[in-house]
Length: 78
Image (cartoon, rainbow, N blue to C red; front, side, top):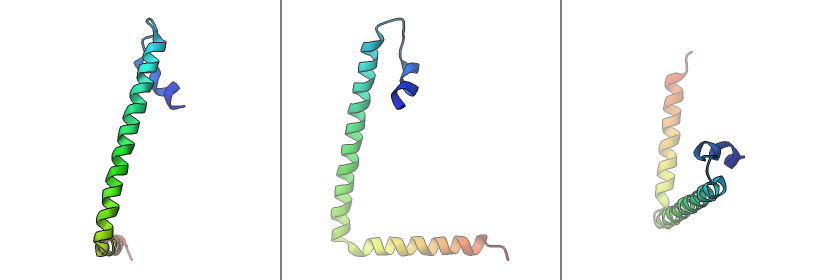
């Protein structure tokens, strides 16, 4: 449903709309592929870094839980 809802606003139906549609689809596929490859590379680097520093994830988790507890403590009205 993405292509039929988004793409018509970028297509001029008075000229060759099939070529325009092919260009839009190709551009979308290439940009999607590049962004997913970027996410995969970043995730791989993050996994390697976290395996080298295992205490970091525990520290971050503890800080987040303490922050949530403080927010709840200050928001609660008794």
